[in-house]
Length: 279
Length: 206
Image (cartoon, rainbow over all chains, first blue to last red; front, side, top):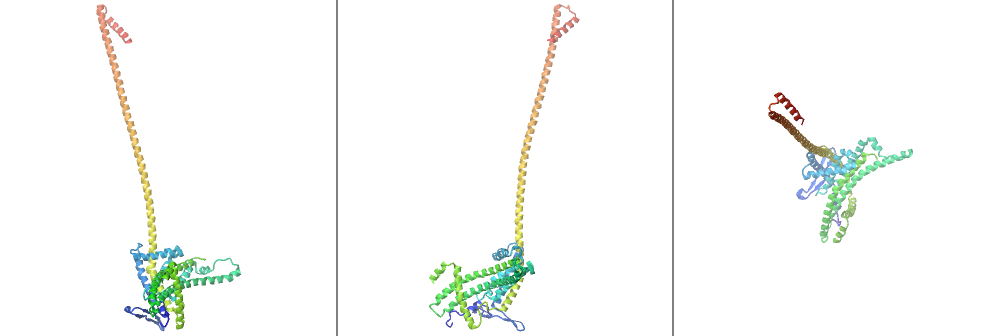
């Protein structure tokens, strides 16, 4: 420990992506993930987050495809679990998506927003599983999700309003005298377009920061235990405190996992709704 | 420790946890970043961009979206809509059926009231008719009896007239014969008849 309380590398290993799974010995110990040869000089190094994302996707398919078959007949589903899933779907549709976009326009976006909510939720919850992690604690993941959302937002706007009109409507209607309009309108257009981009970037950063920070805090609290292991009289107190705080923070993280998935979906729905109508 | 717990208990919990997290985060990231700079690597999430992870995420997400859209969320959205529609239809049907039933009930009640009225009318008519008939029967019976009575009276009167006439004739004859006997054959039979006729005339005058 060379005099330091916390080893940052140790903390970082728990929250960031890595090329291996670090499991206890009885589960196989350290598992290096393979590097797959794509073509020529290109190799794809499989990482922990990639595996977790894939698992999340497979779990979602395994959950919702059977639900679709059960629900197909139009009759209510039977069983607590399936009803629970349906409650999620109905809540998102009726309380998040429809009010944000408007029932008439929302229909084509419902499957996308459902997918984004559950994918983010499972990625967030990955951080609550031992030896796994939250892919949403990585900018690459949240940026892609926000980017896809951005494409859906402007794509939806252009489909709804027409390509030219959508971009023209970025500038709000103002009674400006001619010369001033020539000068101001391009600036306002740029501000609006950049503002829209920033909103989506913030979507990515918000999710990333929440997930990353939560797990860093958890890791730090646990790192206190090893950090104080050399000080015998301090160690028991620190351990008890750390464990207590970790437990409390884990509960909070569980809540945050749902909350952030909800916020991302809610904001995405709001942005889609805003793009459907002119200013 | 207890003091700290007591202190924190008085704050709103979420706020406390958030404050704690913030302090811990700031301190830990400060430590981490100092370390990173020393090592040259980066644990700052904003600096640890991985294009391969981004591409992988894009592919996984789009594939997931396609699969779920086709096999799960598309059909589910459709099924939920159709279920909603079916429920609305059922509610509407039920309301319509209820209204129909009420209407029918009203109709039947109206019919019942009408027929009750009708029955009452029929009964009243029948009673009146019966009364009328019975009165007619009584009246005709009375008339017949009266007629019979008058006839009987007339017959009695005729009989009594006959009897009186016969009696008068007989008594006149007798008186005449007695008078004849008294006058001792002085009156002839022709005078006899004239006398009788005269007596009869006088008799009928009375």
